[in-house]
Image (cartoon, rainbow, N blue to C red; front, side):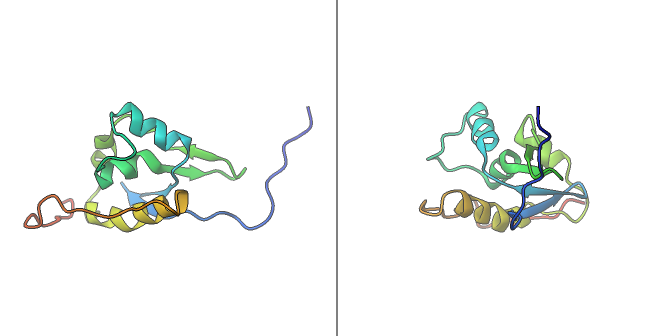
Length: 122
């Protein structure tokens, strides 16, 4: 078997979030759609940002291959949050990743309770 070569050309950049002091890139690869489905979410549904972030979180390794963070449940992402990290900080990179994955899709944010402030984790 011939050795694998490292991809060349411009590296693909993905939006990122920091959870628990660790940086995750967001990519809506097959793993993200699989996780959403396994958690009972339909693609055409209103899906909470934290669920989308947990599904799309992962890293591009030195070999250029995508590896999902593989959160078993969306709450595992929130459990990893540390002081000063906010759920509100997830919205922009998640929406950017969605638009990158499906540029023709209509994506909009909806606030469930506008009177509830986003409070950083203490």
